[in-house]
Image (cartoon, rainbow, N blue to C red; front, side, top):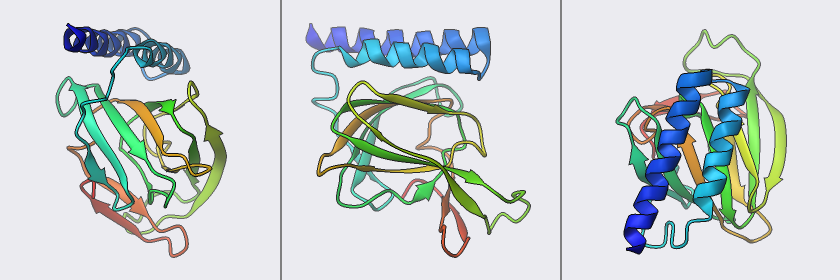
Length: 189
């Protein structure tokens, strides 16, 4: 019974995200609707408790896909970001909405300063640096507006729900070395 309640809640959140994108496109209004859908989903008892996670970014971060419309469709991910080290600066090649379930997340959003004409080099600067707490949410738009890094904060592991425009586990990402400017393209590591 509990599993069915969780499955139904997950399905509703993906449906609400799809309706928001279909109605408003990738816009502020759609992202805000998806934030509301994730807030509702976050109140589901037992969400994520039995989820097995796949390590990401060689940083202790881990994630699991909870639901997906397919490789090119809306995808809901449950993620963990420990405090020991940040994820590398990376992108997802997609819009996204992150909602913090538990812990604190230091979320750093980066912007490209170059014209992206060289696929192996990038110049980046911090656009904003925020500490997100349970109930807080952040969103980003399509590339190049999707570059970020994150880490559990104040000794706490951050647990999140993240809705993406496609399955981020199936596509190449860009990993950015801020100091050297080097860009590496790879599947989630």
